[in-house]
Image (cartoon, rainbow, N blue to C red; front, side, top):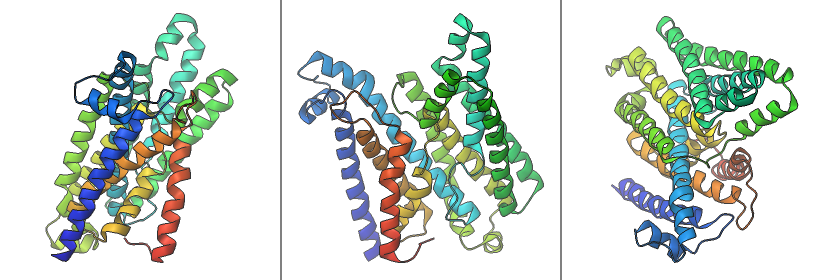
Amino acid sequence: MQLRKKHTAYFWALAALLVFAILLNISLGSVSIPVSDVVSSLAGQGASKETWNFIITEYRVPKAITAILTGSALAVSGLLMQTLFRNPLAGPFVLGLSSGASLGVAILILGAGAFGGLLGSVLLSQWSLVIASAFGSFLVLLAVLAVTFKIKDTMAILIIGLMFGSVTAAVVSVLSYFSNAEKLQQYIFWSFGSLGNQSWSGVTIMTLCCLLGFLLAFSSGKSLNALLLGENYAKSMGVRIKRTTILIILATSILAGGITAFVGPIAFVGLAVPHITRQYFKSSNHFTLLPAVMLSGAILMLLCDSVAQLPTSEYTLPINAITSLLGAPVVIWLLVRKRKLLF
């Protein structure tokens, strides 16, 4: 009972911190907007300046929603992979999904350079990059699922997923080597990750992907709890290992692959957030951990994006660099203070 009250208090604190992070993220940027105007605009009353109202509704709110979806999806994906493989170093891209997405985008960018002119600019539109990234992740997913049907050992699936990632990363390296400087720079900028420039239609598609992934994750909550004690125990509890493994891989692919297709590969969040959450909640119950990592991941991405925007400056830092620079010291500090890794 005492632990339940403590968890409830943590959830309320995370909810309050999420609201604060949303308001901070929307108010900061190249144009600073007072929080009171942000609240007024979100409430439908409009900001004191029409330009502020346009910036909030058409740019910063979609970006904030994208940050929330990205952080939540990657954090849940990381938790699923760490539980499935019972490996604290597993992350959302351990199956090679990020490398597959990178391969799809690399092929598109280099291929568009071969066409040039109007056709090249059409091929390199935002939606074409999204489709290429999603297609690359989907191909890797199909390969991993084909292996999953043949192999029962989850550790073997993990190793094969890493090999898929290595192969696709090698192909990307070869393509990069033969590309010109302009196209290589364009690909590198995509690999930095970006939460901005998302249309409302793109945000809607991301939301649907995340809802489907979250539904699959929560429906596997009981099986995830059993898997923590080993496959033999899970089988004795009536868990169908192969079916559960496929569901978890599908959920991770939908969440991590869908997010990567729109914002690019975002490092660190999926690996670190589950560990940070476990340190405070001290629970292995996934019905507690899943909503906790969703909130924690969303808060971390919002705060990192706020820093990346370099308030009052027109420059924006790569979000990948900020997530690692801010998150890694926190995880190191937590582990040093706790002296052990909760898993």
